[in-house]
Each structure stands twice: as C-alpha cells, then as structure tokens.
Length: 358
Image 1 (cartoon, helix red, strand yellow):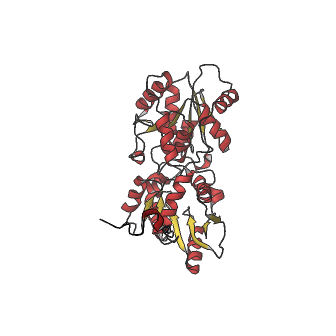
Image 2 (spheres, one colour):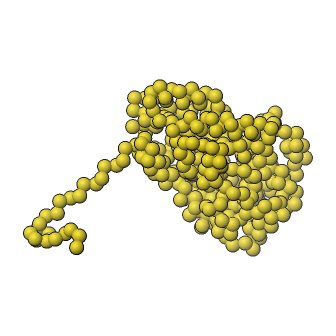
Image 3 (cartoon, one colour):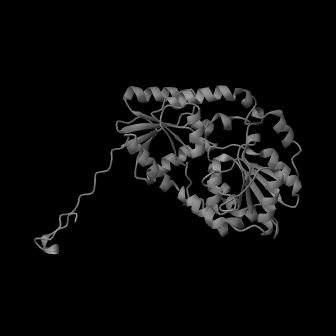
C-alpha cells in the first residue's frame, strides 16, 4: 500500500514551512516502512494534500473518482494569514472561508498542534481533526561542535563575539520589527535573519523597517538546510519572535540543535514548551531583551537538555508511528493482525496445570 503525497503547488511553497512539512511526510512514512508516490498508483490508498491552492480541488476530485480517502493538512489558519503580505489583513476573513471549504473536502484533517486543532474546530469544521506534529529530523538537526566552529569561521567571528539568529519570511507576523528593535538595543551583538520574501509582496511598513536596518543586522536570505543547520549549531541564541504559528518547524530544528531559544509567549506553545523549562518566553521587546541578555551572560539556567528531549519526542520516526495510528483509526490502514499466542507445551507446566483466571 502507498500514500500519494500530492505535490501540486510544492514549487510555490517549497521554501516555506509547508514545503518542509511535505518533505517530512515523505520521509516519516519511509522510516515507518510505508511507500509513497507522487502520482496515482493502483495501490495508493489515500492522498495527502498540503495546500489550499485551486489545483488542490482537482486532486480531491481525482481521489473521489477513484474512491480513495483524502487527508487534508491544515497548515494555514486565518490567524496566521494576517500580518503577512500586502492586503492580508483585509483578506483574512475570506481566507478563513476558503480554507474551511478546502479542509472540509477531506475525509480527515490533520494540523500540527492542539492550538491549531481548536482553531479549526472553532471555524465549524465537521470532519475529524487530529493534531499531529510536523516533526523534525533529529538525525540531521543535532548539536555539533564542528558545525559551531564552521559557522564562526564563515562569519569571521572574534572570540567572545555573540550572535542571535532568526528564521522565516521577512514579514511582520514573524516578528521582524521586534527583531530589528532588539538589534538596535544590543549593538555589541551580531544579528542574522535567515529567510526571504519577495519585496513586491511586503507592505510599506515592512519595507520602511528594512530600509534603515541596524548595522549589526545581516540578511543572508534563503539558505539550504545544511547552512541553516550550521547556523543553529553555531549561533548563541535563536530568537523566534513570531506573533502567530500553527507549530513552527524552525523551532523544532533549533531545539534539536541545542541552541538556547527565546520565543514570543503565544498560545501555540502551550502544553509542550514551557518558559524556563525548554525555552524562554516573553511578550514584548523588553522581555525579549532581558531573556537574550540572560542567556548570553549566563545568568539564566541552561535549558538545552530539556529542549533536546522535546525535539526528540517529535522526531520523524515518532510522528510517523502516530500517523499510522490515525490511518488505522480512519480505516486507511487495516488494523495489525494480533500476534499469535504460542501453544504451551504440557511439559512446561504438567498435564493438569491450570493457567486460566483464578
């Protein structure tokens, strides 16, 4: 049996978290011993759809015509559509109706966290909605002294020079204005923002914020996963100040690489990331600055061991097994055959031994 991972729109979303999630699904199923395909095959039992682009509707129709199940991934919400691109705030209510329609075409809806599950259910979703992490490749994203040294060489860092990084689209929702303000308050620290957004999509407020970026801020742009891993391993703090997420794959990657992490205190992290246990959270720039300075000067406790444990609990292997459980519950995979109970030789207990309930 195979799972069809629909790749329509993947080129468009390939550099986003959705693109990473699609790649994760292929890999987690492979590690779980399940084959995937990028087109319909005779043994494809279901289709995964990850985007809400118009072509996705044709993918749903093709599944219906074949009598196959549709698994729709709810990566997007109205809430995380806001503060993203030009006009996104005005379009957000319409976007909510569109994604509700698209997700409603699935037989089952998967979304990364309990927070996003509750959001989707609040939209009036009638189909079953499960929360299941996007996962993280802990065999690839892992601490490394060698990669830390390579990062410092790459950037020509002096002994004792500190670096704070973030990753994401250069948009307001990802916390870019607060990141820039944090850099202004800490001119002795170097700040790197990995990621890129087409300037034509950015509202004027973000273009204005980027124009006079502080001298200690560098934008390396979109980089490959090897370079990003090196940055996680080499920098001193990961400051992810996003205002809204459905999970945050980059957060999982950072935790897996052992970099101290500072997050905005938003509901998506409730129940799995606690401030002072795996990460440090704050609500505003004053709090972000206090947390980053506390990590850099060593006055705050080191949380990396707990962070690594959390990342490993969301490994691709673990999430792949959880995905198989959902398949079985929804009738996509058959239940495993119960293990046969081996016959017990009477020589072990004697001819008249009683092994039933007392």
